[in-house]
Length: 215
Length: 228
Ligand SMILES: Cc1cc2nc3c(=O)[nH]c(=O)nc-3n(C[C@H](O)[C@H](O)[C@H](O)COP(=O)(O)O)c2cc1C
Image 1 (spheres, each protein chain N blue to C red):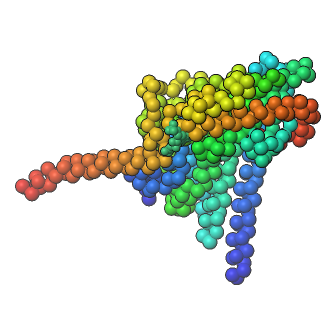
Image 2 (image 1 turned 90 degrees about the vertical axis):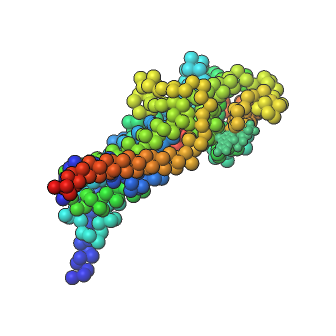
C-alpha cells in the first residue's frame, strides 16, 4: 500500500517535470532565433559606433578571429572584428578588457584603423558605480568619445594617462580609478595592434564563431 | 472566504508584499535604482504571480500534499524561465539591464508564499485576483522606490524609458534638476534600504491616521449612546 502511494506521488512529480521542461523547451525553441538575432544586432550597433559604417563593405560580424594576449587584459580568447573595403583592410575592432576597474573588469570595444588611430571606443559591459564610474558610458557623458582620433603618437606614450597621473585624459570628479583603467586598456590595445597589425588582417576568419557574443 | 475587494485591498495596501510581508527584498532593493528598472522587474513579477497562482489553483485538487512544494517550485521555475526567454526575445535592451535579476524572481518567496498560502486553497478566479493584487502592490513599491531614488540620486525621472517603450520614449525622460551632481547615497544599496524604511514608515503613519479617524467617527455615537 505504502509503495503504491509513493509511486503515484513520484509519477505525479515526474509528470510535472516533463510538462515544465516541455514548456521551457518549446519557448526556447520559438525564441532562440529571435534572441540570437537581438544579440547580433546589439553587438553590430556597438560595432558601428566604433567604426564608420561607410568606411567598409564586408560583413564585419563574421569576419572575426579570436586572439589571446596579456595586452588585452584577459586570458580568454578575445574577438577581433575586421573591417575591409573591396577586400582591403580598413580597421579592426579589438575587444580588450580593463581588469582594474573600481568594481571589476570593464569590457570594451576599441576600433583602430590601419594607421593605428582610434576610430572609436565603447563600453560593452561594466559594473562601475552608478553616478560615479558609469560616466564612461557613451549615453551618460562624452568622455569615451574623446578617444576618437587619438593614437600612440597623439599623445605620446607618456600622455596616455589621466591628468592626475600627468597624462592627457580627464578623470571624473571623485572617480579616478575607472577612467585610469579605461585609458590604460585602450593604450594597451593600441600597442597590441601596432605589434600584430599584419597578422590580424592575414588570418582566416574563425569558422565556428563562438555563440557567446557580448550583448 | 475572502471577498474580491478585500483581496485587492490586501495586495495593494494592508498586506503589501514589499511593505508589510517584506518578501522579495533582494530584487526589490537591488533593481530600484531607477523608475524604469523598477517597472520592468515589477511587471515581470506581476506576470509570474498571476500565472503561477492561476496554474497552481487549477491543479490544486490533483496535487498530493507530500509533493506539492516540489510541484510548485517546478511550476514557478518553468514560468520564470519562459518569461526570461520571452523578455530576451522581445525587450532585449531591458533584458540586458534586468537580466541577472529575472532568474531571481524564482527565489522571491512572495511567489511560493502565495502559491502555498492562497492559490493552493482557493478557486482559480480568486487565485488570479490575489496574484494580480499582490503583484501590483509589489510593482507599486518598486516604481515608487525606484522613482524616489532616481530623483534624489540622479535628478531625473523615467530615464532610459526607451528600453521598454521603444525609441520614441527617449523624450519621456524628465530632467528635474539641471546640472545635478547626483546624490550617491540614494543610488547605492544603502539608499534602497533607507528608502524602503521611509516608505514603510509613511505607510504606518497613514494607517495610524486612518485608525484614529475611524475611532473618532465612532466615538460621538458611543457618547450619544451613553447619554441616552
Ligand atoms: C561607494 C563608492 C563607490 C565608488 N565608485 C567608484 C567608481 O565606480 N569609480 C571610481 O573611479 N571611483 C569610485 N569611487 C571613488 C574611489 O574610491 C576613489 O576615491 C576615487 O576614484 C579616487 O579619485 P579622487 O582621488 O579623484 O577622489 C567610489 C567611492 C565610494 C565610496
